[in-house]
Image (cartoon, rainbow, N blue to C red; front, top):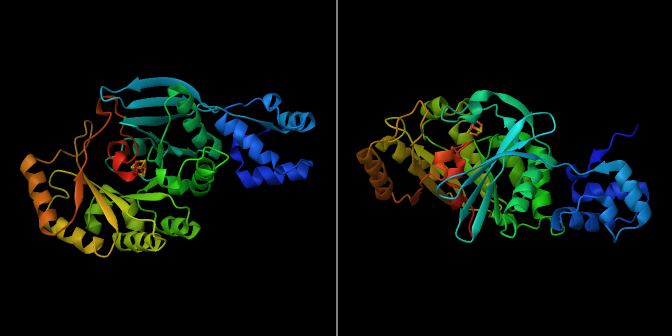
Length: 348
Ligand code: SF4
């Protein structure tokens, strides 16, 4: 028996190559992409501009997967969190953040996560597996169908998992999101968020995809950052900043840094001083997010503590934005408390 393949796991070029091997014209790849990603037709028999013979062949070789919506919660601020079921019984979360004319989708890239950031709920359940390209793209397709005629305008890789740890599938899905015969989302409408995998940031810069980058920084001293984010033991701040500088050589800036203020952990003047040093010469945006997490080992900073830190940043000419959480009442902030500051990562 032939094992059918999920056509959504193929990039445009791979699909073209497969069609040529099967003896069909490579231009059918564009037609198929158009049917699947633009018109949302997943039955090959309905793809009427493709020859009957090719359609029969495609039906024998391929199938189109979907993720199953298990639950949807909507916050009082309009943020919606979707729980999707995968073929093997695992579940993933996807968050939609509407704001004005913008609808930003926050996609997951892994089931669980290996990196165990101390403030993150997702990391505490351990890593199960990577998502494949289809499972990443299907989050977009399902939510897109659910909110039609409204449209998703931006995609951020800020859900559960570390996107750069699932590098090839993250890149594969970006190619589908941005392909003009696929979902055709502008590359600057796509943002990858990382906990700081320096070698992978460098790999990303070599690919020069044109997407945005967001880095969870949260401390400017290695000892403290390693306590908050164990990944820092392997890739300390100097290595992270060197990777960011390489990324910026492609003129893909600004890079966004996320900085959660944690009571008496990372709010000192010394931290601000080191931040100034690290950001020197970098095209950046920085989002300051006063911690306000229930069920966290960290306490929210006091108001005077926040003000003092912000004053110190101003004194040092560090330009920042203070971000407020979105979807708090539905725990929309998975991953790197990411849904909270998403809006700043992607420009309209
Ligand atoms: S914040 Fe991101 S990288 Fe860190 S544990 Fe959570 S999902 Fe993983």
